[in-house]
Image (cartoon, rainbow, N blue to C red; front, side, top):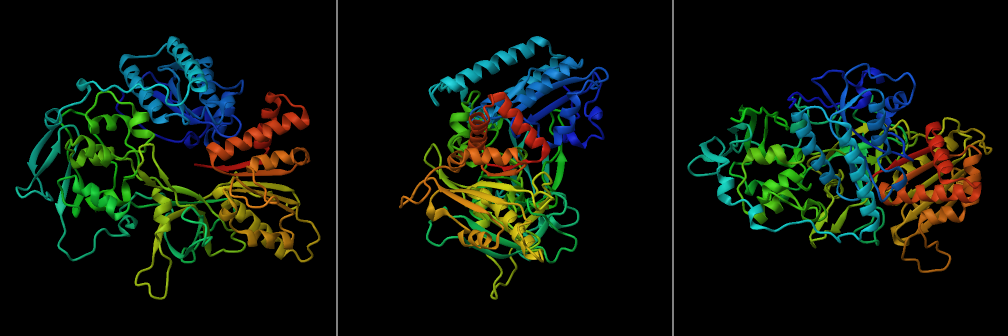
Length: 620
């Protein structure tokens, strides 16, 4: 099996022709999603377009495999179409498929799909080139899965098994460990558990009581490379609930300052990526299950395992065990299927039912099984902390020194009846703004990420249609604020700003935010019309109690005429529900009011996407 692995985005190649490597010793593994109406992700667009040309030529012996990421329920007509196309087209161009096409379904359990696919991929890499039969097998299994998903009741099939043979004993787990003397051990004899299958980490004990731990700025030091480039410690100057009487699910607004960072700027439509940190109580719980001190410093790898498989330590060096757990590991994420099996001591596991759906964490599985775990096993397998993307809710024309975020704290009950809170949204909610009595300045680790495909038209006279659901209101607020600023800067505003139609959907009237702000925008002419919808909680007939997609359908003829006259459309909200509902609504309106077939309607939306007249800011 190939031991050297490099990971890169498709657009990092100098040209589409250089994406693949032609060599019998190289496996080109593609993992791709689908965006829009069956469109490739933005960083794969040039490669995808090149594959579609007559000039495309792989230029030799290119060995490849493809895993597609899609959602069969939300987008059945375009399920994994990009992965399927790349898989087929590369074979047509002479590529040698080394493993069957993988189809990941985010509406079911994409982690299970990927785990099963990669397990077989490793076998394929070890046994040599794949064959066309592998592709045929994949297509048949994909068709069967589509049929099963569309026709079977959720939860009707339980593939979990409970035979005692599938559960390892604690003795089986113990033989994978040994006890050795170690600096930083909690034990009186100075020993700690060492894994025989993972590199041994070098620890030093530095807790002399002279400084506070964990250190909030430790990952901003010059020798650290944890954060993405241009990440700053941005001061929080405001953090508040946008409604005082709407309960714990109300949206919040945070304002951070960028005044102290010369050269840092943003545009309406950009994102702010935020690095959360785990709560202290969660971090302490993980420290309790390992046999080393949280203050022990991790200096790096002391020795590789005896199995001959060298591994790279996935976290920064020169920080403590506690700091690693708090800042660098997502302690609230479910473990991978393979790690879940290890934690529970099972050879077989219904990962979807037992782990993924109830969002069970590493510590829950450890508590259930009672099996011991070493520091190395924990740190090499915990999900690395990833930044969360938030749409910026302000315009630099109005707030060049500040960035506004609009977010909703996530809280829900799992299928097992446990309370879960969103890691980053809870972290943001618990952050306090600067006050006169503050002894320290609260910050968040964040960076501005440009979003060049989500911009207002360069021509101010272009009409726009803004549609949002829930927290999708954030980029809409930014665009409206931008239009208001442009109105204010026009010496003689005489209608030269294009018409702006606003469609917003909220859970209930109590959930509605920025009402006064949008009324002001209507008054000054930055908005032409505003349509507000509520999913539930309406108390009077004049309230529009329906989904925002249904409000759009109600005005279907106007919307379709708007599209035909060159208007730009912006969709903002959750991908699985809002995004899928909006796609269905637009397709149905095109079929009804322009007498399009479904294929013609999809082609029309794809054309709008390519022209930049349909822009989406969708995420879950």
